[in-house]
Length: 161
Length: 198
Image (cartoon, rainbow over all chains, first blue to last red; front, side):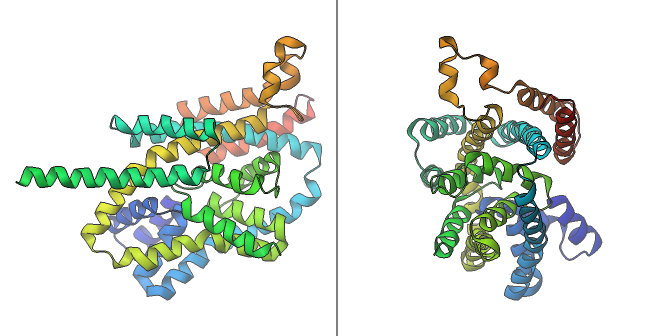
């Protein structure tokens, strides 16, 4: 969806610059929730204040919302049809591949230090081994980021002295 | 009344899901399936349908699950629940920070969150795989019983694994867009069904 937003708002309408768009994408990734939703809120607010944010949010969720309502309604009638079951099984097999692909892509582009892989493995072992609620693992990730931030500040201060 | 709980559950999911829809799967799994609102199989179907329809996966799954559990009001509440945290955090906190604070916060939360999101997506891989590869009424436990009577093919669906392998090859070796892979897989599923394989 991001390339679509870029083409529409940066290239065609020229409402925001390429630099602003880059900032908006990285901010959207740092906040919880869908990236497209976060970008819509940020762009909407930039262009039209709070009302702009609300309208952009509505605009980005309404099409999905309506399409899914129709699909969910139809699905009640066809969920037991054998050909539908077969098609969904094939699609979910492909979804497994998509998820693995996402893991490899994030690993390659986003994990560049030596501590992150250790956290990933530790988090996975916690999730699978102890059955801990995923929320706690996410909180641990945030805390780790904050601790790392504090250490970095301390190190910078020492260097300055 | 299921509605307040539905709103609250999706608010929680929206608040703690980072890195887009995939990292959200284990969270939804824990919140929805342990409540008995959906089975694992139903949730995997919803993920598959969300992949085939336009729009963010997070919104699609929230709307779908909300509708299944509470009809149209349920769909509205679940969808609102999942976006309200974004709205509050971005409009309520983020825009009041200075440019410098904004940069630091982004850098450091992403730094801490990314390895965790990776682990969550790995867990999602296992969840979707288990609910796809195992034949109805079997699970990981049955794998351990293979030596004591049951046969591998009675438990695992080799066609599903083959589709995953082919999709992986296409994704890694070509530049074909994931949505094309998904739609092609669905079509192949239909064809395989009519020749009697799937």
